[in-house]
Image (tube, rainbow, N blue to C red; front, side):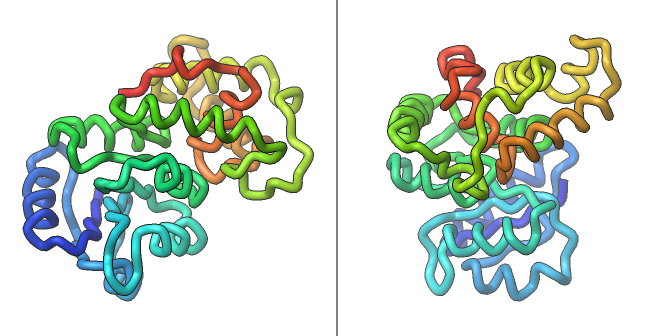
Length: 228
């Protein structure tokens, strides 16, 4: 994966780049000190994944993530921050980021996070499990789902087929598309087609939105999820 790092702390940024370049099949191709600097050069570089800080001058992580998800939807966004409040994580998920990684986490866990995003489309670390539970309980108080692109749509769990629900459960348990294809004896492309239809039906910005949808309607339990 071709990775960009956007963080205003130069020492952290360079140390993170050194760590990432030590991982197999990962290359840091871009570094920027804030969102504006990154957006100004993004069209000149091929990027698969952005590691994005929240607290930055000129253009913060929230603003940058919004632009990335609207204009560059094929680029994965992994937030890396010290902010772990319910409000900040909720905002990250609402904007459509593919994962949240705390700066206090084990550096080796970062490779797990990147692999999870590449294979499953999302990542949330184990240390955030309690926060996610709070978010789900908070979300269930509302009649609309803030993690969906259009909260005005009439969406319910009945719109999903039994096979689609089965695939949501398998992904939530940490299975990649290839592993799901083996478990269900179907083609990988069929799994990817199901994933696409699931996201269309739930109108989720990414698979985090799908998981939240499934949790909201009790299609899966957060205690059953694999939060790595």
